[in-house]
Amino acid sequence: MNRDSSWRSLYLYTSIPAIIYCIFVFIFVSESPRWLFLQGREAEAIEILKRIAPIKDRSLKSSLVSHVDIKVETSNSIKCLFVKRWALRRILGVMVLGFGIGMVYYGIPMGVQDLGFNIYLGTMCNALLEMPSYLVTFLVIDRCQKRVSILGFCVASGIFSILCFIVSNYGSNDQEIVIMKIGIEIASLFGACMAYNILLIYTTELFPTSVRNAATSMVRLAIAFSSVVSPVLARAGRRNAILSYGVFGFVIIFCSILTKGATLCDTMNEQEKENDTFVT
Image (cartoon, rainbow, N blue to C red; front, side):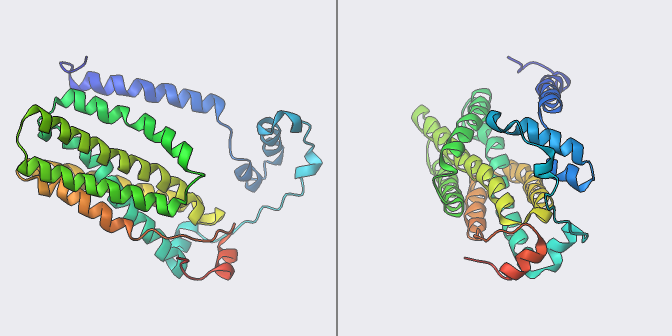
């Protein structure tokens, strides 16, 4: 509908849903009770705990939470990720993994115009793919091991991406081949979407509470950095698909081997005592 609109109009159209989302977040999302406790705002924290508690537990009394032991670490959380050996290996592992997933997640949709398929319809299909990926994530997240799930979706995404390169290089431009290429492209993107969703959940479970926010931010930074590289490769892929779909596939498969499991603790000190190395 907006194919003839200027880029200014497109920016406006895509900004409106984000503004509405922010309004809903401001109205309905509560502040973290743990953060409020750490700031000494115990009364506000208790009120939020009462509000988010199940209906039958709404009678929660202040005396029940006044003795909550919130362990505070004064050390810089981001610094701890790089000075402690187990944390450094773990954060580098998930950041490299995030880079590989992000490269496919952002790069695959940029190359859809080179498949001979309608660019508007292809972009719409890629966008609609996000919704079933969230639903499938919800269904599998508690039924499958996250490490195995990420590995499986990354490998599947990589294989489909490489297949897309093969079909693009050696296939014709017949309608059936074009439909096959867009189908393979969607399958590759779906695998990347699933890996992306599970990775963010997995990251929050890999690190103790005191550094969890910092670790998640670092992973998101690695994913965002891949979005800088992806357009360059997508552009280069117009001459040879191996420079886009081929590279995307090999990178995500290579990065997926760095996925590891871990035991979890609330603080860095507890984690040091529990486990000083990676747990495979």
